[in-house]
Length: 189
Image (cartoon, rainbow, N blue to C red):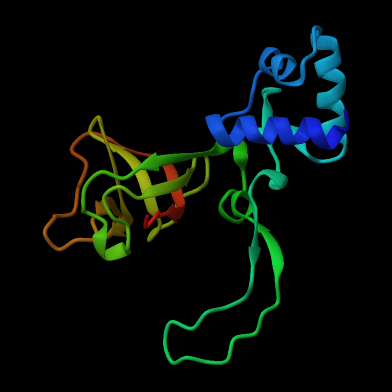
């Protein structure tokens, strides 16, 4: 069988399970009896850019797993003539700069509604990124976790919601930034 066939089987597994298969699972998928044969196929897929490994040596998908056509710009104001200039864009590459330090969280609550972040949305957050004043952050404050704007006033760092129904949060004991929000994902249907 061709390398493209093997790649297709692994992509199908990833799309169904939302995770990469283990070497044992790849052996079953591809009908191999030895992990050595799997290792050779994986090495070839890495060589052609279809797979990659993270810093811990785990398999991770590359852009071929999430590319969609990007046609151009759409006006959200006054209608203009459409120009169709198709190119390919990887959603992962668009949203994720550092895969090893990025994770996704489901939003619960409405304290960030005025920032366009709703209950049920997914936020993409990058751990280890230096947070600046005004960033939306995932923070641990006095032992609990929340997502708010990072603010600083007169040398005091605090968290500010994006909903006037909520008050700013000033730490009584500790405030630690866990990650900076870098993107939002919302599915309409």
